[in-house]
Structure formats: C-alpha cells, structure tokens
Length: 231
Image (cartoon, rainbow, N blue to C red; front, side, top):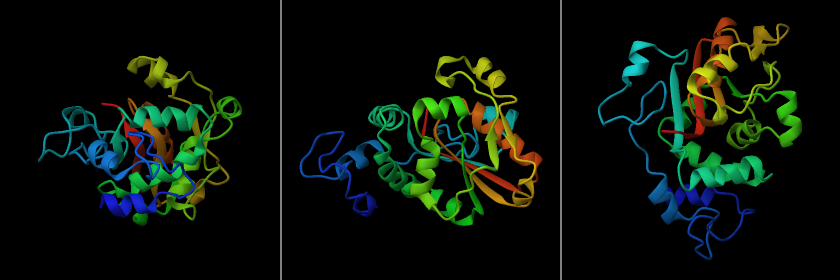
C-alpha cells in the first residue's frame, strides 16, 4: 500500500524526503510513511484513537456529535505537524498533493469520498483569507476530488480567533454563529451526502458548528475528513 501511495505523490514536489532527508526520494519517502502514517483504531464519530475493537469513545456515546462519521489520515504530531505549518502558514500549497494521497490511503476515506455527493471545504472568513492568501481546505479538496467540490454553499460569516489560542469552552462559544448556508443555494444540499473537509481537527468545534448548519438545511449524511487530528 505504501509503495502505491508514494508513486501517486506529485512528481513536481521535492526529490528529497522532507522528513528524513533521504536522497533521491519522493516528497515523503516510503520509509517515513511506513513509520509515521500507520493506521490506528479510532472513534467513528470524533476520530480520537481507541483500543482495538471499540467503535466510539465515551464522550461521543454520552453526547453524540452532529456528524455520522469522522475520519483522519494521521495524528497531528511529528512530522505532520511541521509539514502542515509549512503548508498552511509558509505559503507552500504544493504539499496538498502529498497530503491528499495520504488521506485517500487512510482507512474508509476512499469509500466516503466515492459515496459523497458533495465535498465541502471549510470556509475561511474574509479577513483570514486575505491574511493567508489561500484557503488550505479548498486546496486540499481540489487535490482530493475536484469534480465534487462545492464552494459558496457553506459560508463563514464571522471571523473568530485562531482555535489553537483558545480553551475548549472558548472554542465552542466562538464558533456558535460563525457559519451559515446561502439561502438561495440551500436546495442543493437537501438529501445530499456530504464530506466536510478541513486540514486539522482539534476539539471539533468548528466542524461541528458547520455540521449543525448543514443539518438544518436537510443534509442526509455528514462525514468530516481532516488530514490530521490532535490527540
């Protein structure tokens, strides 16, 4: 699987592994993928790691999230956290192809994308988009499946502080009214299966707030998909 995965990584990316610096190599070499991207058992609705044989964590059983499935490719840890910072904050969108390849190779991701009617990247506020220069979720979505991307349906109507700077309680409060669906386009969502895409999931506050808005329009099934999940 890892050999096939690496063969699909874009040839335009560096020919030296960004993790172990092996030369010649792909952007992420086979050995590093094998070492740092091994699949683990995860909660089906929040993607936190679980012991083998368990489907859901206690928190999700007590308070079910507003999503049907939650998927991630890797943990937000070395080396992926470093590469994600390079992608997101150092204007290096070329990493999207490698990240998308890893995501498609993770358990259950390919079937979720195939079954989805729409792939919706998490929107940025106007202020955040202007400061960053690109929406990292949209760039990832293009690399995953450009035919199913739906932009302009889900809107971010409030700019909120970076989630990494907030406590869990503050995150939940900050995004309560941050999202909306364009009322003129909401008919496109009724009865649809949606994959809601973001780069990183921390508490899930933003993804869940956006999911509740999508549910209110009649979306039938929501899978959240991220490249990395904090643990």
